[in-house]
Amino acid sequence: MNKVELLGYYGNDEIISCSAWTSTSRDLSEDKINRIPKLLKMLADEGHHTPFEKSYLHFLVTTDIASHIHIIKHRIGVSVNGESARYKEIKEDQYLIPEDWPKVWQEQLRSYTEEGMKKYHECLNDLVNNHGVERKRAKESARFFRGYNTQITADVSFNWRSFYHFQSLRNKPNAQLEIREIAQKMLDLVKNIEGNPFRYTIEAFEL
Image (cartoon, rainbow, N blue to C red; front, side):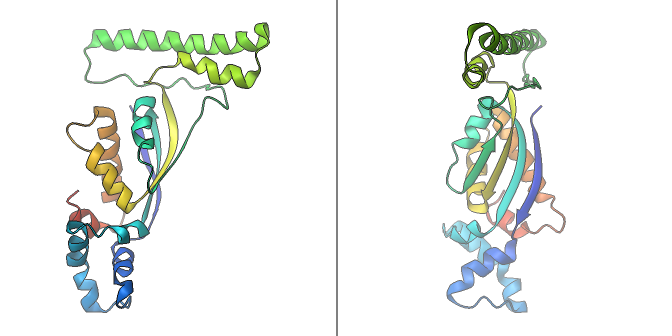
């Protein structure tokens, strides 16, 4: 199973609102605080999304390679630093088996995956020890034995504007199941931050 952890965040509804109010006055009176929900809804509905870039969400994700590719396609306002089999030998052989598959295909994929991972380690060591291949090259090429269901760990951060874009594409019924589950886990974690600092931003985007 893929895993998601919220490492931290910066900002809240007030910070986003103050960014929007830069052209007038950033001073927060009680009246302006009460207007925050309406302001954020207006900004979201009318496409004035720049103020949402002033808040950030930071996650640690253990994900299959296929879903990792979905994440790195989001490049504007998104930062991704993933574990790389090019620079180190992957010692922990983690992988994903689709839970919605019938057992017979789950077992075949598990067998196929474990054989590929075994070949990965064997090939890497043999290339270095018996064929004179430089270890760096051996590591980066032996990983071809590892499939799309191999899991890696990635450090992922979004500004709120980009997080909404990610949610709007990946947390939809037509998205791949695995990336949809990751997106939903991210959203659930944000919704459950103590004090609910992004309550009105979440409501504004109807997430």
